[in-house]
Length: 218
Image (cartoon, rainbow, N blue to C red; front, side):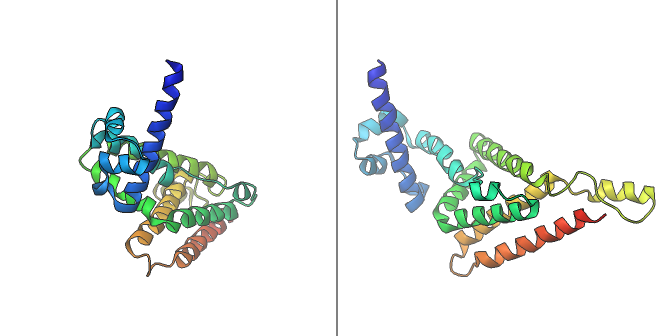
């Protein structure tokens, strides 16, 4: 039993890789059990044995799509940067470059997002992946901001009011960072020739530097 199990798992992984290749190149509409069989160089019956029908294949493929688009990558060189604003800026650049370098991955993510509008299971999986992405970023932004707004002037009542209405948190900065990263990827998909990732990154850098100065104010 164990001896036969490993080859089946290997074939399944080969088919998922083939399915991802087809979907990334041609979209989910072009993904069929037969196209996957041809790409993976297996029989149509073998694909049917593992996935039964297209919707099962599409659901199984989502993990790979989320890994490519909604799992934070922190390069060793970035993790070693000690200044919080510089570290976050370097991470933003790395993620923007990664996601915009090959827009096909994010385009596929957008296709799943569209499916998720009417499919609660897929919508939940995407939501959980994005929540995890934001939480990982928040661990890096916590060194850049505090949960309390620094107010240098004004009465205590004013301080309390501003704190309640305008407090900047690590989670809030993480949410903005995700918007910057995924907004970059989205524009790279929609307008690959007209969108300039360098300008997008430069604007993000200025925002982070200003935030760092504000929170460093005594």
